[in-house]
Amino acid sequence: MTSAAAPGKIILFGEHAVVYGQPALAVPVTQVGVRVEVSDSTRPGIWLEAPNVNLHSELKSLSPDHPLAVAILSLFTFLGIDSFPWLQININSTIPVAAGLGSGAAVSVALLRALSTHLNQSITNEQISALAYEVEKLYHGTPSGIDNTVVTYGRPVFFIKGNPIEVLRVAEAFTMVIGDTGIPAPTREAVAAVRRLWEADPPHWETLFDRIGRIALQARKAIEAGAIQALGPLMDENHGLLQEMTVSSPELDRLVEAARQAGADGAKLSGGGRGGNMIALVRPEAAEKVSKSLERAGAKRALITRLDKNKD
Ligand code: PMV
Image (cartoon, rainbow, N blue to C red; front, side, top):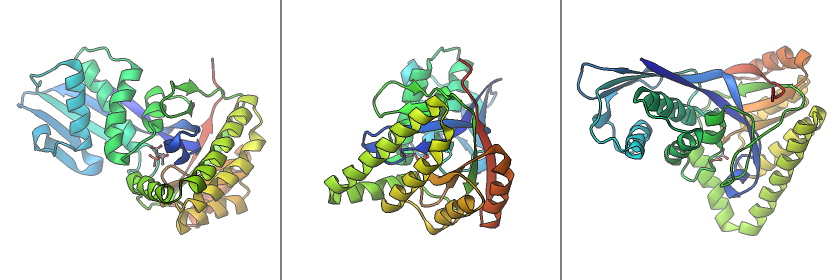
């Protein structure tokens, strides 16, 4: 049996604008994740068990554009495998689906890793990320590639679409609370809605994307200088621009406001929006209070996460 894991992720700054070439910052969230186990089977075929999404199927019975089928078949094509082995693949995830926590990317990355290792094929992170990006297209339509990048490398990243990965140097640890609205929000729809806005008035929306890009650059500087107190106002400003972009929702706004009222230094939605998760920057001693107040304000769950200083 071979296994592999991949973490969840949150976007700190720059979602949506990143699709249009602006920089964004994302970090892994190791409290949640996906684990994939691959073993040889005595049954013909490739059998997939993913209890979280109630999937118990043989590969060939999945539609050809099913994300799991695309991940497996594109790996086989990449490795030049044309006679399929008999396998049992178990996929277990603690990442909520369609919540902006990178569940789709984590499933692809853990699956590609476990499967290639099981088949004794060495494959680089760059290749894993590139294959997972192809699957991301099914989830997102026109993805920037940030999810597969941060989940593959499991490191905080400064990301610009099409550029090589840059690891973000975290000079001082900081704490965040993640609040889940519990409302599933397919990223694809939010990304398509922003595209329609942009198509109707490119100069207007590009000015707004530029403003978000500048926030992401300022945030990078602050994180690399250990000036954590500068991040709260940048989060608030970024959230305001995402509201203008119509990707917030009453539930997200309620949680963002509750976090601020409970003493968070800043808060914003994270990911595709219109549901899913928000994040709040907190002093460690305020984390519990903010977490409780998010739950009282309707969060399905709240998670405290800490971004540690880089070791190297
Ligand atoms: O997977 P999510 O919901 O965290 O969203 C990804 C971020 C977007 O910028 C909205 C889309 C993308 O591909 O970058």
